[in-house]
Structure formats: C-alpha cells, structure tokens
Length: 105
Image (cartoon, rainbow, N blue to C red):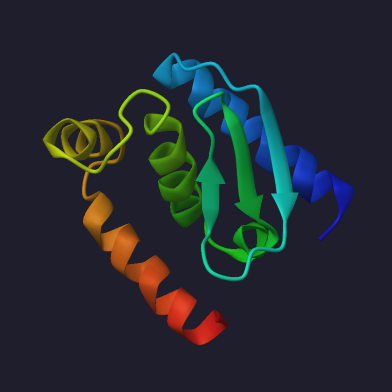
C-alpha cells in the first residue's frame, strides 16, 4: 500500500461524498480487525487498509455504505433504497465482501 494508493482512495471517498451531498470531516485508513469501515456522527470516516486491494466496486460499496450513515444512521428501508439508488444491486457486493472477510479475518 503506497501513499498514492491512499490518496487515490481518499479522492474516491470525496467524490462519493460530493455526489451524496454529505460533509466529511476526516478520512483515515488503518488496519481494522473486525470490520471494513466505521463512521462517527461528526463525519469522521475510518476505512480498513485491506480495502485498497479489493476491486473498485467493492470499495464503492463500503464507501457509499458509510457515507449514507451520515444521513441515515441505520440499515432501514430508507438506507436500503438509497443504496439501491446509488449502487443498484448492492446486495451482491455485500455478499462478496462477506466472502472476502471470511478469508481475511
């Protein structure tokens, strides 16, 4: 993982944040043992460095998932509708990530 990889990923997060019209306070990349990402209600996003080795559509799933939590704090109907609106068949990516997690952790 190079600093260029990190910068490219952070730029991708910023592009999605602009598209979703959410304000991001900070973006961090670090090793996380039990999850791909987390966010605070203040807009602080933390992503697992292992995301950098995944396919772009899986990165997008995690990015959009976290950014939408800045608008919708749960996984209810509204959150699911927004995921579908922005990513289409997001459930397939969700399952792929679960498969990666089983191999990874």
